[in-house]
Length: 275
Image (cartoon, rainbow, N blue to C red; front, side):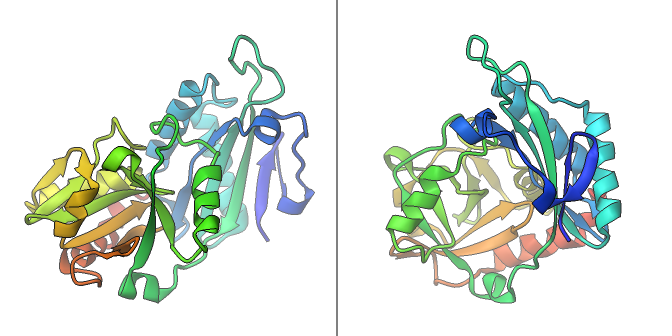
């Protein structure tokens, strides 16, 4: 049974309500973050909560709880669930707007059983749908996913996620950071253009530790033709190989050795970031 924390109590998700006047419902105003556990221990919990706090402040909101109190809520939910859990704390706009600020934000935290990704996702890779848009305020983890979902729907829904490609640039996927293996090293968009993913940062750290060259710079669509490999990173997806962008295969059209090595390095080093 999945749980939700709201107003000081943990309840089954089906028993939790949100006012229809909340600005998350009426205007899509809200931010969130995603945290997962391994062996019941949360992965990079403090870093995710600091990012949630940054997202809220960029959205003209303050966390309704301190980071320390929210950490306690999350650990309490994990203990109640047992096993491995994906945790999503949401900060909503609440029901009041004052001069484009949201002085009474609301909070709820979802606890859902982690669903293991199908093995073929890592063995065969995924395809991404390029779209000519960018996320609004990319440094903020907004709850608004309308553009990529409708884009996939109109394209037939066959791709794993969208890839934002505004004005010929390549930035990030629907819910992950995008990397290519190019000229023997990693290239990924700078944090000025994308959400600063927690897993993104750890992959960059691991790559540097094994002396794999890394560039954080703007990436162009035309460079994908030269990429030998590509992958996306995220809390739940870890390191997911990308073998096609639109009609264009990446490299040989199958997961490559650098992607596999970095995924293995992440899994082998999880204990460094379990809290």
